[in-house]
Image (cartoon, rainbow, N blue to C red):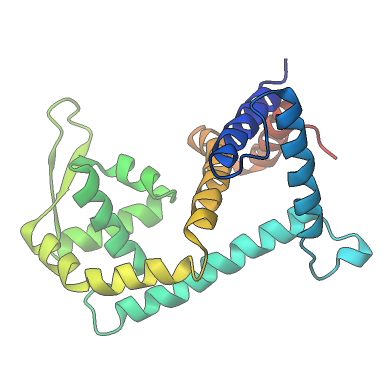
Length: 224
């Protein structure tokens, strides 16, 4: 059974119910639903995006991958403004502190995994934060091999000093999207996250990662 298809149909019915609140043209039965779907399809076809290379067969997947990379780089550019005249060395410094403030004490590896980073890079960041006195560490009460880390008062203070710039950088990334567009983008990105995160936490070796991820993709979708 194609559970992804069932979820998509349920999502479509939910959108139909919301649409009927402001548009009484559609009856609350199968006929009304089919009419709404047809109208939505016509609207989407009229709003079909175009992109460089579409004439030569460039795929939507290629465009999505490129745009996500570009957006990541734009976000990093804005983060450089946050770092200007600040004591943070990198964007990850304040992201780690924000996570500790939001989620509380956790192990070093839990914090590194939450930020989707390799252990060596994550440990460098954590060691820098400890050296600056922005986080503290102590032995875990349940596992002596692990260190628990938490944000200090000094860490809270340095974070609060830069929060206005951090919020501005965050707002700029989503640019001039309408509120409804932001919600739709969140839904789509969460769907991508739900696919990729389980693959990431399995920590497959690099030589096997692509094959495993592609097999996962084939098992959940129809590859075109």
